[in-house]
Image (tube, rainbow, N blue to C red; front, side, top):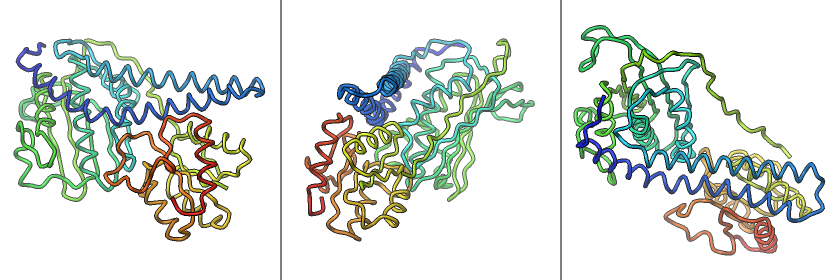
Length: 385
């Protein structure tokens, strides 16, 4: 298999489009990791901590720095990958590794599910190009669900008989599926979606699906889709299986959700590391804290402890149906004098940023001293932020 040079330029050009979209989301993820590092370093620098707590903080610094290094490495590998590097590719391993890079791309209101099984699935091709195809499909899936939903990435083996799939020879194939629960593709748009420069988005280039189609064909495969209006779309990339590679059973790692906490500041943060450390620091200030991982949990705390809560400290971008701003508006409608302190790792969270200022916004990553200063200032306020 060879990737002719004339195919490399459009592949790299479209890759830059994906990287541009990836940049802001990756910065957000890195800022969360840096916040964990800075907060733990701040705890250690305070001195007087028991040895086990110092070691625990050091371990969290190490874990967060490793995650940041892994994320950076994956971005660089994706950016540097060349279209002429061909070899055996284990698709479940590729997708599992790609999932960490995909997480920042997926909006908070969209759930990503990886269903790969435990077997190796080998194809012969270019890993960077296949990653690019999967990323394009995931981005389209997210765009198709502005109100939230689930995107599922799966991988399976299937045998094709003669004439069963157009442009596919009979034999064994590995099928990558990316399915969403979005609006579906209108009938009038379906015949043109793989054509270069065809787009229904106001800011689209029309190259995403054209590149997916090209990558599939360069690998001797094909891409197809099924869509139902109002119910979603599933894209399938058929790639010839590489039967020369010996297969062994592998275990795909499963990331379990962090344990919830039910322990008077209303603290809303979806990153478990930041939530844990912020909770610890606020408790060390002699403050009672009600932690919540999303707006819905925060509303439940508000209903039970409305009269006790003296400050809402919330991330602006949250999973679920309520953003931090939406949550604040609901609580301020109930009690207009409630102080609100916002935080975020995004550099551009909202077109309307008039609701926060330097005095009621704490940018991630932040140090423990900056957190304590901001919280004390917010608690001293008697008017809504």
